[in-house]
Image (cartoon, rainbow, N blue to C red; front, side):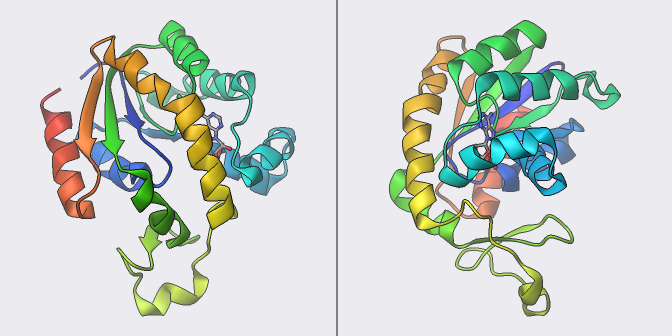
Length: 207
Ligand code: AMP
């Protein structure tokens, strides 16, 4: 399928987890603005220094910064046939900018109610060696790697509340923006990882 796919949904919906499956199915590279920003923060670049305060407090990094990052990423040779966006766009201005630089063919919206999100995020752990994501309740890590797992700095209960508020105010309206353009495919994000994965797979193969 030509064009890019957007994975849409609240923080903790499982976008990063399900992205792996879509990458396998479509061969499109995953473009996660959150991962790109975290890499910039770790490397201590100018972008990272600017972004860190917003990220740590659960607010959005300014649109111009994000759009510049995406424009640069889409010039890479592996992006020629479209990419899988994860965590982008997050505002209507970002979606408008994206529409002017590339074709979006589908937006897969993983739907999870707020009540489930705090537990998912606070229990989330990442393996820094492989990038694999675990959850102490829903997807426990193998005991032998437990010691090296890390928790994201913004995965605390207080920051999650800000991130959810930011999501409802600035990102959720994008759902109807894409819906009115006939691009939104809702998927129930409340099942097990495998169940949600199956729903995502059938959405992707029917594109
Ligand atoms: P994520 O890993 O997608 O949850 O992103 C972590 C944090 O990075 C967010 O809470 C924002 O502070 C920032 N961020 C990631 N993607 C975007 C975006 N598209 N627009 C603005 N801020 C972003």
